[in-house]
Each structure stands twice: as structure tokens, then as C-alpha cells.
Image 1 (spheres, chains in turn yellow, brown):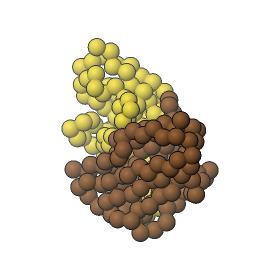
Image 2 (cartoon, helix red, strand yellow; image 1 turned 45 degrees about the horizontal axis):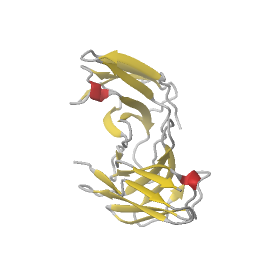
Image 3 (cartoon, one colour; image 1 turned 90 degrees about the vertical axis):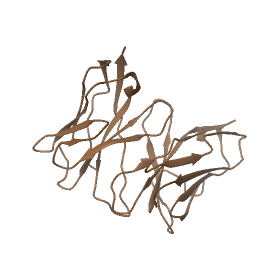
Length: 112
Length: 115
């Protein structure tokens, strides 16, 4: 399984943008880049995903490098509720045997 | 949309007893469900993958006779921890995936404490 590399932790100020980086130099041509986040004592929550083009949704934006070897999750205006562990995961195209493997993620802290 | 529930949310049991955890997809059909375990301060560890109507596929090191998984319908999967011991105490999380979609949707988790 292709692996991702993320910083262990990051801090940001409330109401400021946050850029969470992820390296995935061994990504295959068909792997999707998914981001999930996990708040304390909860199951992971889907944030966003993309393949080649940048993506936006109501939660965040995903910027994907042209060579697809890295990506950045952008929270445009962080709130205290965004404090969580963020996981960047590569997901193969759907099959009955597809699975995702979680790395250690980035623990994001938000300063009031 | 894409809501997954788990029941119970927490359970305390005596050593040697069996515990059943349910995972339900509330508004979509889950052709595949996954079970994870998470110990404190650690990441999620995949235990098994189950496709509706088929036997579950267990990850290396996970005892299939101890962690029984049933996925009898497109909206329900169950994980039974048999003869639970204190080392089985953990946070168990399920996820569900619909056919043709890569995204998994996760349940809120079940915290198990074995005394």
C-alpha cells in the first residue's frame, strides 16, 4: 500500500487559515487522495477527496500538486471545533477488497 | 446522508463473557463494512473487511475465532468479541462503503472495557 507522510502535530490560531501538508511520493496513477479527521472520542469523519484537480467543499479545500506526489488540506478559517487528528490516506479505486490503512496523522491544535 | 450508527456506544463486561457490537448504515446500502480497533493515543488499526453475504477477510494477527463478524444484510454488520479479556478493552469503530464508491463513512465508535 502506498504510504503518506504527515507532520505529527501543528498549531494554528483561531479564525486563521490552516494548511495541512501530506507527502505521497509513491502514489499510483489511480489512487485517490482522501482526508479524514477524528475528533476526540469519535469515529473519523470524511473531509474531502480528490484525484488530480483541486477540490472545494463546505468543510475545506484540497490542493493537489501537479505531479500528485503531495497535497495540502486547507481549512480557510479555523475554529476551535477543528481541533482534531487529520489523516491523509491514499485509496485505490473501488473493489470488493478495497481497504484503507490509517497512518499516524497530524494532530491539529487551535489557539483561541 | 451517509450516516453510520453503532450500538452500544459503550459497554463494560466481565472477563470471559462475549460482547456484540452492531454497525448500521442508516441511509445507504453498505456492500462493504470494515471494523477497526483503536488503542489510546494510537491510530486506527484495521481488523477485518466484510462484504455482504460473504465471510469476512481478517488482517494478519487478528483472530477470526475471537472476533466474529457477520454481515448478513446491506445495512447491518455485527462484531462479536468472544471470551473477552482485559487486553481486548479498546475503542471499536466500524465503517461502511457503498458499491462503486471509494469513500468510507464511519460510525461513532464503541468503547469496550473488560474487567
